[in-house]
Amino acid sequence: MEKVWSVKNDIIKETLKDIKPFNKILFKNLNIIFKNSVFLDRDKAENDENFKQIIPYVIFKNTNDQILITKRTKNQSEKRLHEKISAGIGGHINLDDYSENPEMTFFNGLNREINEELKIKDLEELKYLGLIYDDSNEVSRVHIGILFTAQVKNAEIKEVENFEANWLKKEEIENLKEENFETWTKISLNQLNINI
Image 1: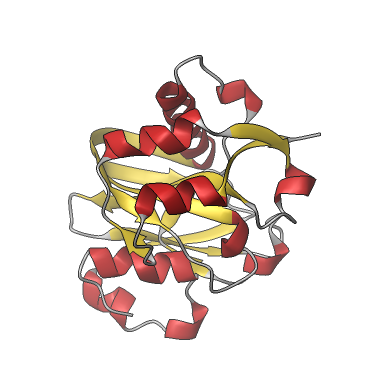
Image 2: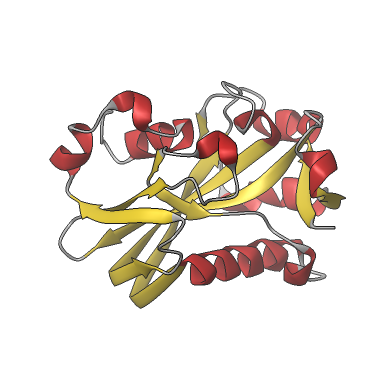
């Protein structure tokens, strides 16, 4: 049974005070969330809105000023997100990522997830932006995103059966159909001044 790192929604609300879809909060202030997180059975966590599963969510930019955009195929496990366009790479933090230092648990999960999904050439910078809190749909209501950008020379999707991928410039992204985007992607790209 898969276990996923999750935190009580009440703790997030206490930490953020004024909750918006995107929350600029100092990374060190996320320690309250990390220290109060526990590993739950994924089946339970996916159906309990008292908890949110913590998801590292990383947008990749290359040296040509392009962003890696993916589209989930029907082979991908999360059926509720099939055919959706995403700019974020990330996923659940599992027991294998555990460290006595909660912040290291988070970064272990982030590193494992991006390396499972991508072949990365020359990671130059990983920059923290803030926290995604979105209650607009059933997937988001049980997840919380911690948003980063990563500057790379290049990156390629490993799971080509699960994702279609393209590097696109700002104006190319803005020309895609808005209804095809995951809500987290809309929220995240807005922070990069990309309007969809």
